[in-house]
Image (tube, rainbow, N blue to C red):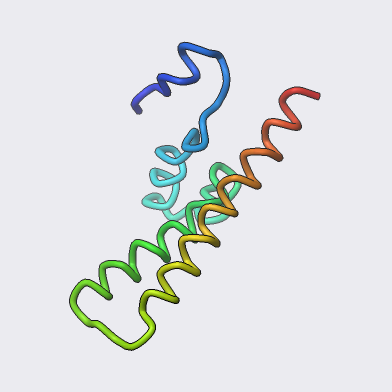
Length: 90
């Protein structure tokens, strides 16, 4: 696995820390462990699948679905990061 440059330089996790291990766990079929490793993995995958689908098939109000998925994904990543940082620094 690639090391996190932010963690190496500053000693603090970044917003993406755990994503590689989470993807590896998904590929092994360990879905709950993947969620515990990086909670943003499922909204991120849903967003990527939708973007891939929408690349070929356009439909009305697709921008609304895209923006909703982006907001949910970013919210999930930021909230899980803040929770993780709270537990680390307490």
